Image (cartoon, rainbow, N blue to C red; front, side, top):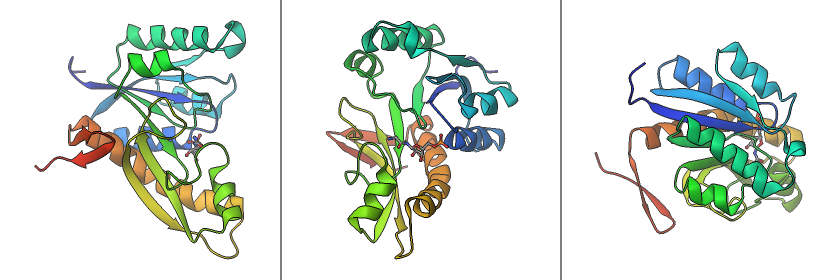
Length: 206
Ligand code: GAR
């Protein structure tokens, strides 16, 4: 393993299908990175099993064993700084990261969200989209800042919402696009193809 290989951490809380898409892209050699660690905030997250199956180091950091969110985030920071990590990918990570964490890894945290942000931030984005009656929703990969799903947008894919859609059917169609979009966004960062101007992410000319 070359010393200067780009190192990723993925933070998860549940199913881990986006984590799987990242692992698959690495194994297909589309992404030239080392997935150094998968950290879960949930003990029995299926995402942990997926990572273990591919020989990736996993850690469960139990929120119940820390007195507050700040202390929990500090444990996360310490773990990530041990490695150290070039990029932190949130993939279905359902805790809100505090200011100290965001500042420590400023510009190095990205998230995938199942809507066309800034529409429908927060929980149950697909349900929000169906209930609102939008004709298109989709998914967004964005840098993480101190707000909820509010950081600079890297890539988006639009997905049509059909009259017959329920939360489940729309979620499934969006998820398929997430699995393409997240590795693509990671690749742009790894290859240093992005520049940030204010809240605008531009693609560098090659
Ligand atoms: C994905 O749809 C992701 O966009 C969403 O959780 C799901 C996780 O699935 N994230 C959020 O809603 C964050 N606000 P996965 O565990 O199978 O990747």
